Image (cartoon, rainbow, N blue to C red):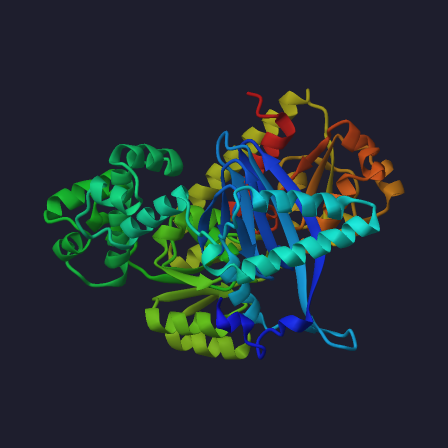
Amino acid sequence: MDTAITNKSIINFSNLDVTIKSVELYTGASGEILKQHVTRWGTLIISLAGSGTMRREDGYTTLERDHIYACPPDSTFGLTSDLGGNLSVVVIRLKLADRNEERVDFQLDESALQILFSNIDGLSLGPAGYLSSQGRTIYDGFASDDGIKKWRAKLDCSELLYMLITSGKMASKEGTKEALERARAFMKENCNKEMTIELLANMAELSPKYFVDLFKKTYGVSALDYLTRARIDLAKSLMLRTDRLLKEVAHEVGYADEFYFSRKFKQLVGMSPTAYLKKRGKRIAVYGSTALIGYLLPLDIIPYAAPLHPKWSKYYCDRYGLEIPVHLDAYRQNHFKEANIERLETTSPDFILCDHELEPWERARLSEVAPIFALPDDRMGWRKKFDVLAEALGAQSEAKKWLEEFERKKGEMAEKIRLIHQSRLLDVAVLKVLRNTVYMYSDLVIDDVIYQGLGISPLHKEEGPIWNVPMSFNNLKQLNADYVLLLVCQESETLQYWTQLQQSTDWMSLPFVRENRVKMIPSEPWREYSPVALSRIVDETALLLTGNRP
């Protein structure tokens, strides 16, 4: 057992109080079953059946049946079922506190919680089926109206924590998929070295044939193709970060022949290494909001450094993470300002794009690193902001081309909606669930795309494009909307309320709920005000309101 956990100066287990905040069961045959979100409480995820993946800030974890996964407070995670994976999990959210003799709760040390949850993450306790059984028992007990059963669920949860913390050598942290993941990680970290299928299969303790089949099934690409991609990704990083010659880069990533390397590079990237370097010649950094990336990409510019996060910038992280050499911390929109500035100081960008709301000390520090351009306030409107940025970067022709394409697409989507609904003007209400309240709301994004761009009529209108109106159930009953677009904020308190709300009789009796006129919209991209986000929202809105009919 880790002494760092049991050290009384960090956690006094004799005073440890465990409070269950929620227990939820999630199931799904394939696709996302729980969106990426911030968990306010420490969270245990017990995999009951099926196969799937958990996404966290630091990457992906393959879920093994009858294993438990742990996320500390204020971290993010999401769950996805494999295609046909029929994943089933129990998610337990806990408040852990140090309760003294006067029954006053004290916040536990953050680093201690990190260590505790890290040490129990990925464990499996014997005998087989024990964890799944405990997960179901805790779920059933907490869902009961019987106070004694709820109390028993708390005791079971405390016992489970005890067994996890004290399990030591009894805990098995690796199954077949973990071994496969270990081999994949080895490939990524050692892609410049010669390796064979036999070597990788031995590492995963699998036969070569089974390793090849399982790797392709798990990751959607063959092991050798994955190795090639890893080498080309490493080559991009070396080319952007260093002054190595192309021949040196080829050797560095495992290719003895630089011409063969160039052919492989062009096959995957669509251009030669020389053309790629020329295109990425100017090192432009983004500091602040991840939405700033959405202003650069339409100018055909991929930033050299930018804040990236699997929750708040999932789209950019998935599609451009490997193209952006320097990843700044995007936790809660530049929460770690000092660390991000220090990172930029060591990477020497040529130009820094930032928000207009810089503190004086930030502006002074950044100005010493490189010329800065502060994008104006959103009140200027995204088009004018886009134009001034394009002018500053000498990319007016790229901006003009992108805007023309955006207007063409927007017109096509508006016409598609009009034809599907036989030229009838649609009434659409946009609702937002935040904490324990439902709001009718609008913002710059919704006003620009939904009402102004696609010509859809707002069911309710306040002065200006931005407003939030709390809605009672009586108000909601009066909504006579063709469609209701519903955004549920992805933080623990709201998600807990939303789970209760959608199961309530009042909610299920609402006409637009009964008649299936509710369309869920995600925070990302709907809370981002940038050209890229607005273009994505045009596509998503048309899909929501037409059902993907041609």
